Amino acid sequence: MTTTVSHAVEPVGLIGVTPPDDSSLRRKARERAIALGLPTAKTEGWKYTNLKSLGRDDLAVPGVSSPDPAILEGWRFPDVPLLVVVNGRYQASLSDAIPSGVTVGSSAENAALIERLDELDPFQDEKNPLAAWNAALHPDALFIDVASGADAGTLQVLFINTGGASSSRGFTLPRLTLTLGESSHATVIETYVSEGTAGTVTLASTRAYCASNAELHHIRIQSEGEGADHYGIVRASLARDSRLRQFAMTAGALTSRYDSTAVLQGEGADCEMNGLYVLDGEQRADHQTLIDHAWPHCNSRQTFKGVLDGRSRGIYEGRIIVRPDAQKTNAAQSNDNLVLSDTAIANSTPQLEIYADDVKCRHGSTIGRLDEDSIFYIRSRGISEERAREILTRGFASEVVDLIASSAIRERIESILTERAGQ
Image 1: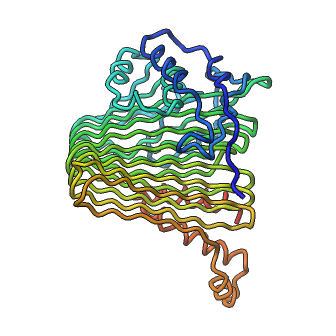
Image 2: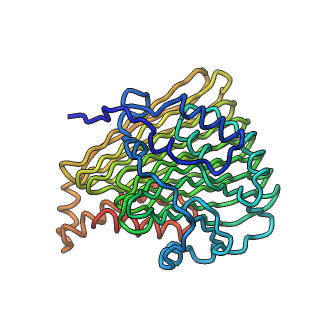
Image 3: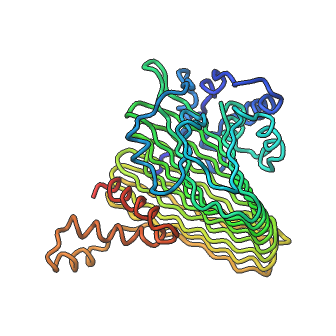
């Protein structure tokens, strides 16, 4: 039986949030968001996402509060500068010093700079209303710029939702802009967490711009609490000969949606967009990816894997567009799902739209269970069934986890996999 979202949602909660200021950019974004309306199950790409949390009238953007120190230390990667954002606002006092060649700022400190960046945003007219609502309501925007020719190493941005008061649901709107100058390099880890088990809502937006020959490794980990709803939007623009290596891990939140688009708009651009979702209980996670080949001689690869247990549901809809002028495109896309229970559901829809005739494109998807013969073989070596299932599940996920260059990040992802897979 197929279950879909059947009711339209009025953006009551969003309309009730007061913007931090009355700038023309915010007014324009709000007007656009209202005109677009919230998608329903009949809207293309929104069949399985329930937006009812955005229609609640008790959404409240919490002020800055001191986060749990255990969260700060627990999510810190060794020897990696940490930038902290609490309830959507950058906290310089909790953040580490940054390396040379990198500039960090926030709209709270320099609103004019952020507005100029927003005005240049090639994605501001997109049709996702959640992106417009973030642009209209975010309380602060974090900006990371890597100078041309600089190697920024690895940076981590930790986004914390501390929740709302007892009578309200904590609603945060983090916003991050990454700009990489010509021939620069950076690895940026985004981590989203929430405090406690009370209901929270996060509507996050990230935009990345890679100049010619720049290389960005972008890691995104969503590990919010079991009462959380999370909507994440990532947009990336790649100039000539630039490279994007992207990995998204979805393990937290009751309901989540990850929406990532990369536009290859210069010859030689190369994009790798990977992800892993590990779901249990009543969790539902929707992954929407799009790689848009707008120029010739560009390459892209997408590999997403899902591990589903309990009554969870994992959705993957990936799309590759090859424009008429994008000859010599080489693109591949795959989505594989491992279903561990009789009540978990996986939906997979890889799509190709090809308007050029000299290209190499392929896609595929699988949905399956653990191989019982393999479990029997491992158990015959004196290993318990539970341990045998763990070995096979980790082996299934390792193909995509091993694509991450950093061993420290791989180890953290693997620990989340072990914890959240309930093994």
